[in-house]
Length: 188
Image 1 (tube, rainbow, N blue to C red):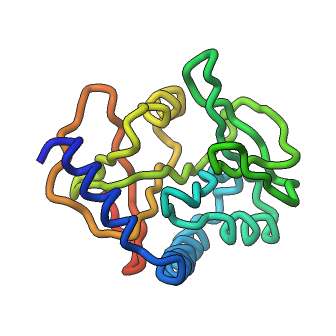
Image 2: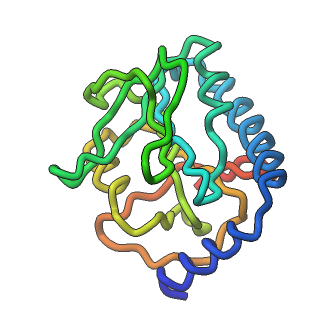
């Protein structure tokens, strides 16, 4: 299958998920992530994506609040349209989020920072393959963002589904180190 076929298939699979199923699966995924993170005592700086409700993404907001309670430094990104890339925001002390016109949650208070302290990044995806290559929404923002980070940064996907056999990769694609779904952690 080519990328567009896979992208369409997984968008359709997500549309079929009810809000109750999304919440249940998200809770299971977050539990597996927290179990994984508890074994990584040296990680204190975590970047996560904020879920877009209309895309039926894994709900990372409960994870945000759990990380906040445990004292992690927390980051997210927003699109910088002028530079056609992502800017990093520290959201460690954020208390609330406001949806923009597109339904994207934005932190009510945040500070723009350089991403140099990030040790683990949770990356949004539609699908991933058995080798760790992911398929996003097709804009390439996260591949650009990851290319500026060191190889030591752990790249983690969260998914409601298991892997496909193969996603055609391009030279700029950066694979995940692991992906977590409701069944557990898959390392690449």
